[in-house]
Length: 419
Image (cartoon, rainbow, N blue to C red):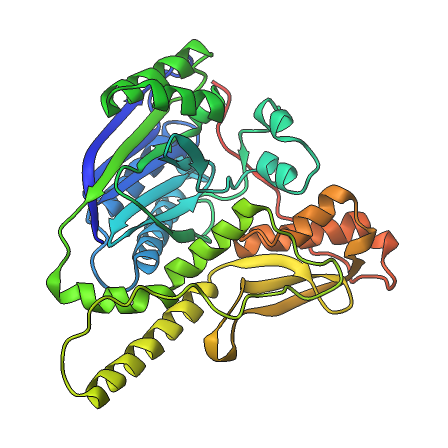
């Protein structure tokens, strides 16, 4: 079932401690984009507006939704980087990015930095993005708690942004959606001031998106308003299916990269963890597709069409899986970096491959570290590599064989100068 945007709103506020607004947000339905700039002398404002200008042209139709949003993000990164190199006053400027594209029965998210995307479904709020920040990395590695992360003095230090480097790694993933889902995109001027529980309570208690946006901004300002506050909200409804696309989409959906991501999300919500001493155990089959009705015709024609569609679906699933990484263990129980997702499709097609194994036994790790290794959380390449490096550096002494020296983690980038 195709989905469309039912209601939407974009609001921004300078906050109580800033003299100008470095956030930018646009809506080019069915795409939404938010950027939170960083850098002195209004360079952050230039960076976020440059990203907004790139995205205002729309995502186009060439490639998957993930590929289209990623291309736009990388184009924006290149333009910001070139502007910074040409002007000494703007050297090092950058911006976070969150973008959401509604297409078919899913919402595709592209993400760099610590601005966030949430989904409210049946009264439950879920964060769909992982912050690219120093504090978020500490929380994911188990070194600090979620409560400690909220008030951490280094929470404004981000590890990834558009602009500071000539190339950027973009997280892009698609989430299956339903009519009635509400999506919230926000800069950290909101999430640094109020908790997820407070955000959820405000969204549940508001009668309209306009009231929700106003209440969220008011709450952030009442809590201090230390930064610019920008929120983008949209709700979904059932749209009209394209008759030329329904049959193919219905057939392919059971083996698409989108549903692979959804299967993994379901696994994470259930809290299942794999064995410490084995390579990741994977189910042998993705949930079957809802086939729908097939056009009448000779059986051999239907069979041929089915084979072609199946082949295309398998290729899409394999390509989608190559965009993510996770940490697990190999047959020897050693901490291992995998590329892909911990699943296997029919015909024996594995959606993961081993990239790197370090000489650290998972069984020797602390309970928190064991959880980080065995839960197979999907990560970007940088996030997964950082976790591997951190485990190797801090836990290598307990390994049966000495690990190779870990590559130093690049220094975190300071997000914003103090007002």
